[in-house]
Length: 353
Ligand code: TXA
Ligand code: MG
Image (cartoon, rainbow, N blue to C red):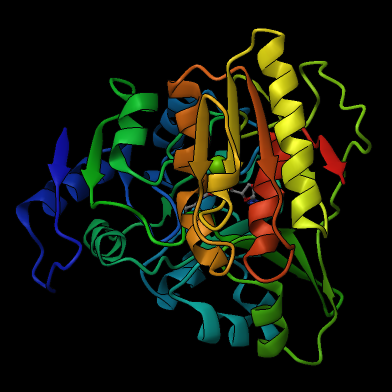
């Protein structure tokens, strides 16, 4: 089933979302828009329904799913409420609804153990999107929803991305147009009074720090393969979002030097007979020549880079590009999430110029 809905929907529930909610209640999978990326939803309390998510995505069963709720009242059916601290409450107040997933101790007998992949914790968030919120309210259930891509591919920011990956494998798609943030939610856990960013995302480290000024924040490791000798060996352990072609990131203080290095690198690939691509930013795209040059947002407005990133990564595959050089961006604000995804897409190959 496919439903097109308006993002500006009022409070009245339309026939489309009523049908989609009914499908979710009956144990089917339904893709829907959130403010970050499209999610593939299923009833989190129904093991067979949750199984449908893993099967459709080809997702490894040891990777837990995020549970989406419509309001904080729904929390008590999922988690151990007495383990929710004042700091947790502060985060919920400041960032929900919004792109922050909070990992909390799970209550037994609430959601299916498949959702948590056997962990004692569950990641929960309230999405900030009118369509997602209405669907969640109408379904009246906690909805487990990973990003609605096939496992390993870039997350979908358009309903057409969901179709490209999952058509015929899921119960339905609610098309609410382009998502907003473009990268997934920030996943955090509070341990021993300190905050660990497990995955950087739509809420920045700086925003978390200003919401909890007294708390120490740990950013995730930035594992990388260094040097210009970038190994081309496939199957590096931690690739995700990766285009089918070879990709590496080039980063440096001197924009001129970076541009020169990239153009030489791309010219060499061209000489070897490979089709070439460059991932850069609008301010810088005119410097480059390659089979496909993608201007991915504005360096001066990094939120626009996040919005365009996954569609750009998908485009290299659509055009069959074999060799890609990507410009890095500063790792502050939303740049931390952008570079985290780019590093994964590039198999952690990063050249410093
Ligand atoms: O923005 C988002 O978060 C999107 C939209 C659809 O809400 N969802 C999403 O889900 O990105 P997914 O499944 O693609 O990513 C969930 C991430 C994974 O990295 C997973 O390992 C982590 O959250 N995660 C989930 N539950 C966890 C837990 N209990 N402990 C640690 N990490 C957890
Ligand atoms: Mg995902």
